[in-house]
Length: 204
View 1 (cartoon, rainbow, N blue to C red):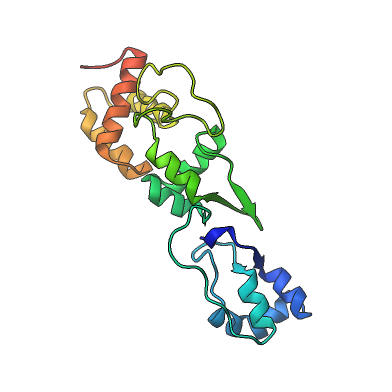
View 2: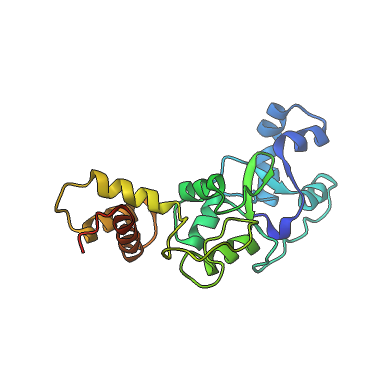
């Protein structure tokens, strides 16, 4: 997470500011630096650091603390976004590609979403009231035929019904989908029901 959308810097630019090659900086200077200035995206392949903290460290000054607490302007990774929405990081990426989330903002190659947007998506998900499931930046359209209309998971549910062995209980399919894609089995049962009804395959 990048707290409150603060300016960041990566190790290539840190080495340039220190006036040494990146390989030298990583071998000689990075261990001490990382003890004082933690990466903002732990577990990510993108090593980004708070710019103000970095500048203070390079100047030999005390490293200022980061803001604490959640804030609407926090920038979240796909994993952090997925944790809030109850889905998987790959589904977050699919949502962004299909327009159910914005494409986010990019910092040094890392794609991030504001906490404000993610909470809005969570609280207005398909079937949760006015505006639920709208594509990012689009006005409310005609009334939906069903609660999950437009949800990209619906196609996944259709495919699961198509490939499942005839007679497989819907609950078993839903459990498998929840384990593979995140969410709850109950939600996937609703998606399967919507998918079956839409294609005329509902077994009742």
